[in-house]
Image (cartoon, rainbow, N blue to C red; front, side):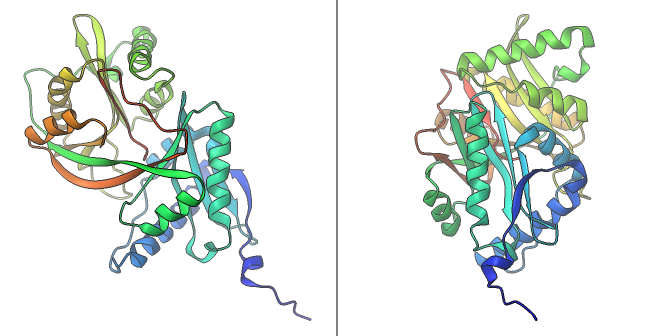
Length: 324
């Protein structure tokens, strides 16, 4: 005799489980289906969100470590995931998604809460994520879980352009000095945002060969750096832009010098532009980018857990991308 079950029972999910490299194809399907459905509900019916580059998924999962979590449905399929990242005291979640047919049963709330709890256990005091500012459903959903809206993050692009000399890159340094250079980079960000640490991201980018770290010197001292990815974000696409994931400067006045290095690095890697994600608190830096010819391409809304908002840098710049 068949037993009737309601739709909520049909869509229960088991987890969290550790997301592994072999889960990438399933994660990609959930990611594409969930965000395509989100765009459709926002009125953009013809948009189909493509799969992410597996190399970028690998970076995201290894960067998150135990924070890469997934939930499985009753047939063992991936029903939801949340990739939570911690860089010292900074914690953020992304990407995260629930497949469309599993939504509405409370799985989304469990996914977000699990990410927040994992980040808190690890010592993160900044806790947040980014969402599309036009999507009121998402903003309301995250607000119901204790997140509050902050400033916009603006994605700007700057054309690639050559300079007289190649940008100094961590990946081109002799192995014997790299540890010392990475330690200098850690000290530069800690001086601006105490407790922040992008060391793991720097080393992982180098290890997976998905990009490099541009170094800015004053004399022999490192006064800034930009962690960049050259690997395409989308599966099957050619490289089109240099994506800056982290940008740190001891002095905001050094922004022009860093932009020149990034534009040159983009040119030498064969891409057309540099993409920078500028947090809304850095108004003067934003104005300087616009004056340099940068174009605004996209906006995201930064949301943080109430009482766990991010600070701003102490006279310099710290831009931290909360997407992969």
